Length: 275
Image (cartoon, rainbow, N blue to C red):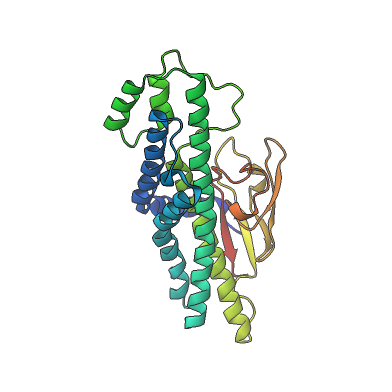
């Protein structure tokens, strides 16, 4: 089997671009949620209460993500290769809930890591709060770290930080890849199960890791495509630091064991093979 990996990489990433664009309102809502909490923390480093409870933030993020995730998984029910029974629909939505839980946990952690970074920054730097508030009000979508830097009287000291500050909007866009690949993978498994139950061989016996073709990336050793059985993980090695993971597909947050080393900002994709 010959796979045109360059063309597949192009088509897969073009599809993801459309998905990310469609989810722009979701990404913005998540960013505004993060910024709102940061603004409160800047004005009162000891701020607490319900808005800062982990469960409350998680529930809010889960609710924001739910529609997008379920919409992606409902495509499985529309496939002519899968079972459309009520039992299968229930199982599919359960898988959608699991994926939604995973991405919401990652995004919730990012919000609280950002808040911890802000707390540390406020304790070590002198910030012009009035200037910060003026800029935050004028630019509600802007990265709060950039505003803090501008409102700092002597420049921010960031040495020895346990936490980093990262925009949740970018994280959410990155997790769109995970949602897309997870739903595609579940669709392939469902098609195989339906075929097996009707006495046919699997529709998708294998899958191929498609390298992004981008320069200075971590997974160029995957160039040409690495193929494994459909339910087997890919052995993935970060060429820059040697970290290794067994991932079911690119961006597989659930099986990440190296703190995002092989999944964050990875533009690789996956193809499910019919032969």
